[in-house]
Image (cartoon, one colour):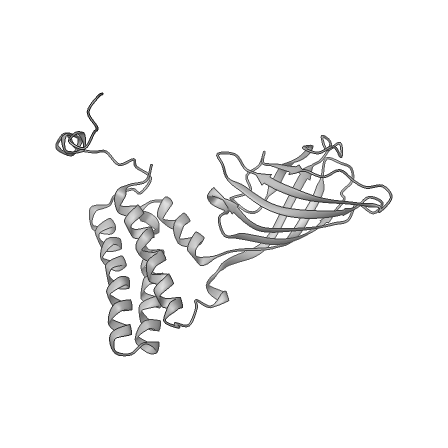
Length: 234
């Protein structure tokens, strides 16, 4: 459970981003996204071709794709086409999953996989991956590119604790400058009010050195206040 403060901060950023888009602000450039090369090795010795069979990740250069993650396949190969074209789920555990699709040539074992969203640490995850066989089924290679949307970048930063607050501050400063350059009159005041509120919450996080991973602990007084709203036992 995240702190109430960090929930407020995330909600404010989403609202500020929506207002910026609605009022016509220039979007954050693609260069600001977290992106890079992806290199993964899978052990597919347990992949039978039956729906639900899987490969296990044995090596990865992306921290979200942890060793031991499983890639599940949900459609069987069709021999008459020479292909297996299947929905896939990359499951890293703890509800961290990416969804995509893979097409595998049954003869050459060359594949193309794409991922276009996910849950948990894979929110905003996108990838285009070329698959190629290694020496045997235990070292199948995935090589390609990936990127995360900016919103997920910030979410992951805030989950990581106050050590990452400076990244959020940089983002807020960038959005504020765009507002000043693009907006005029009342539109500027509305957008600035939202983004300044975000900045104030970030500053409070830094001042109080609060770890956003800590659960929200209600005081006794607060608990008593909450109890006032409980329905009576009937």
